[in-house]
Image 1 (cartoon, rainbow, N blue to C red):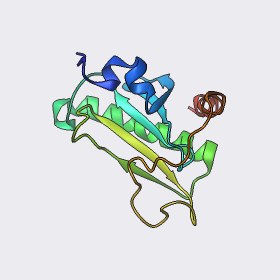
Image 2: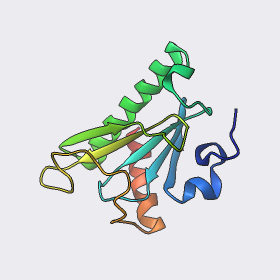
Image 3: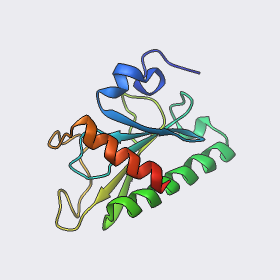
Length: 139
């Protein structure tokens, strides 16, 4: 089911404001978060429009989190972070999704929670595509 007010459901211009497409996975769609102050930050958005984890079956939830883990392994392989943080936000954007955020010792916000959108580092489309290619290869 799609929600016509949801960026993840409608894709296109809405999601392009904050995400660069990496690939479609079994349980959802993977995007590079355009704000890259945490190099390699991605979002895995669930394939269907659901607002809460409780809205999917145990099997669907387990498959989604298995893919979160798969993406995290690829992020570790490509970007070599010291730690990966995870966040599920959705107060206003009610679509199940997970932020997978590499953190680097001594880097931006090390030792604390990550800011949703620090609005500091943006890349060119070519730079996003090179990162996306590296993640695809590592998946």
